[in-house]
Length: 268
Image 1: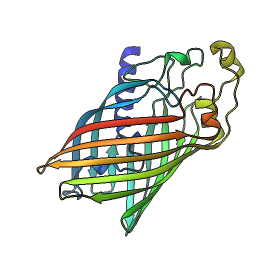
Image 2 (image 1 turned 135 degrees about the horizontal axis):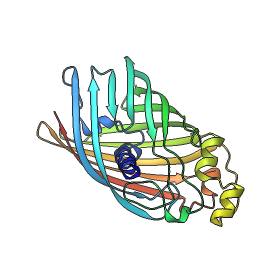
Image 3 (image 1 turned 60 degrees about the vertical axis):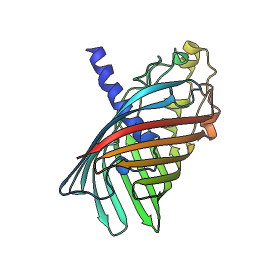
């Protein structure tokens, strides 16, 4: 049973990587520019090179399945979770459920964690309540999202805000660049980057209190290449700079993090 649950969490993590590296890039980057009928479905798979956890200087390759299902441009199921949204001209607002996979004390292609976290304890997976909005301003898209995690031991608050700029090079090739920042409250920062007295005793790291603030600043670019009417190849990359109390944490071995992903998807 424990192995089955780990595989289930692994699949969620792998799917989540697809959107984590995109940040401000919509999941529709792997889909058509325009929706078709009531249902719009895109399925795909790929691989990502990512840090073993936020702050790690060790990297690992993870498989990345991709599912993007939209009903009447109102309800969507994506790697980010299940959401409902409404459009008012250039404004889109919505809310829904998302999932945080937490962190373990071991390294694996299907999990977030590292053997160097031994003694720190696991961070439990958590369901998240999410509200978001984006606004199309000329060629740019401004976006903001607020997520409240709900698990005991993983109940932090995250605020992401940024801007994305898509540019169509040709009829079949689109490039999207973005910049964003992540703010986190004290609970989230202490859970992911702090070291309590007990954790210090068990792990050997110095005790550390992490306060609320900007967790990271992100820069990225994505390229989508269409092959005919249905197939899409997408390559995405993100560079993340840890800031504030995050970068000074004793469990952070690299303040600069990079993630690269490639995926092939089929739009039905």
